[in-house]
Image (cartoon, rainbow, N blue to C red; front, side):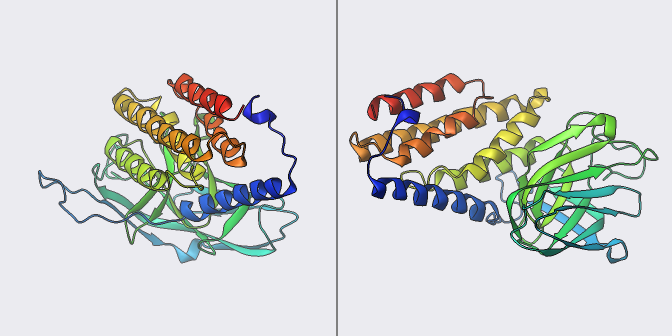
Length: 318
């Protein structure tokens, strides 16, 4: 019998399933707002900088605040001094309750250290043309469903993302740099990202070294719960898939795609083996939840390997 065909006759098991899935969901949300452990400057053996430095200044003169009703949602829009628009689309019921929402555009946005500090597409004096930022408040607010942040560049300035770019959640205090699922809409001169909480967000070009660090960080968080009932943390799988997607457009990122494919499979395989050994043939909802991971990785070139692991789960719980 296939995993998705399992039926439970015990109300206790059904209740356990619901609780376990809810716990896993909330763990994913909480961990997605977690902080990366900052590394010291010049941590590499060759003496190069190994931390991502992020700095910006909020432009209080451009701040926009709106009271949003949870059952109605809203579009909240702010514009920076250069005419770049930051649009926050809040669907109905994404907020848990009526909420005052603030968008504050940033000036002097700089990303340096690991991966360098200039944008390859920039010309002239503005070497940080691809680095723009915004602060969304109240900081740390988590949503019941995804909210979309759009950064739209005006016709009066060059659009630095003719090839796909990214929007990243950042925390300058500790070098936090988490890639959000991002779409580049060249015809509208925009980047659009799916976000899960309010914080600071910046735009950036695809930078190999910074993305590699983000991948390593996501795997360190994803891998730590392996061998527990709260693996996988889907928040980090979504980040890895977002990086994988944008890397498909860049030849110099093929090693990053392989890194995601191989390490994600290794992590998934380890937990499948652990779960089968722990359950000893019992049909429980952990197998159902674990099986969902394969549906998230069908875009990977080694997706068949994940299907094979799910087949093993099918057999174990038949």
